Length: 246
Length: 201
Image (cartoon, rainbow over all chains, first blue to last red; front, side):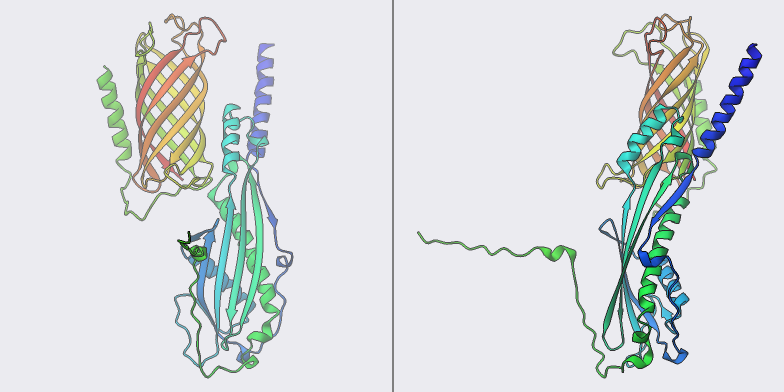
């Protein structure tokens, strides 16, 4: 009788363990993509002799509003996506030299804003609950990691005309404690970034004729405007006046 | 006896840490991210904490604590308190050498907050608690049941030798009692200085 009871509890225990391990290791990514990012960029035809080179001028990256170091990975991804659509004859990174004056080329500037919400407070409470339950509640307590990206691509044609493209995408990784890996966060970021880039390319491809070599002549006076913008320079001076009129 | 045990623990820690290559060039700042796991082993010597309370039993003995932790968050906060939260579990084994030779083993979920603002020297605070079985029961006036609970609050410092390996030293306060499941229930309080190492992957 005792042995039978022990066997029953062992079977229950094993089943419970298997269920806990399988449901406790689940991960899924929910992507809230931009409407035009799900499809591949439209195909427009551009003659080979109409293609001009593109050179990356700058990439600015901010995370939760604070500036970050230049990410080579972001640049490589952008250049890779541009290469895939085949709009430009040659693609140069930020470290490459610009074509000599008088040649037709497009200058690109990318602003990449990332917004991360790792639900830290939520996780602190959930950690306490999971720990207090001796990990039994692990399968029933999902953890979340939100990532949103906003990209602004500015393309300046050889004649000084500028086009702006914008896209945004967001996603959430839902996971259980035992399935948390650094890879999962990378995967989420990869999906969101890809979605953003695809949306940008969608918009760019619609302007194929704008970037063809015959669309505009080269300016005789290649003048480039230079500007400095600082986020901190929003303080406006307050005039102080002293009056001695008594 | 105590100093010999301490010497053995110290020697074991040094021996186990010796193969870790110290290839720290400054730029390799350890950055555990969400999902980074940590396995570690700590060892120390437990002393009865009888400074404030009058205790009849002065338990003492070496303790070994293998542990596993999962990093729950990327660095949170933006000042000196910037840190990361980890959740994990630990097995506690204590060999009580005083008042009688006996053993205790427990399983404790553990939560840890590591301050990451300092570079490779990282202080942390930790809390753990869980069931604890020991055969001190009957040999001491404070406890008559073998099934107990152990609660731990501690602080320590991790020194990262590489971005994946760290040595730890710290202090823990431990409380062992049966949570009123049987009588008597006079808790045993102990101090536990410890040293150990962790690997991150």
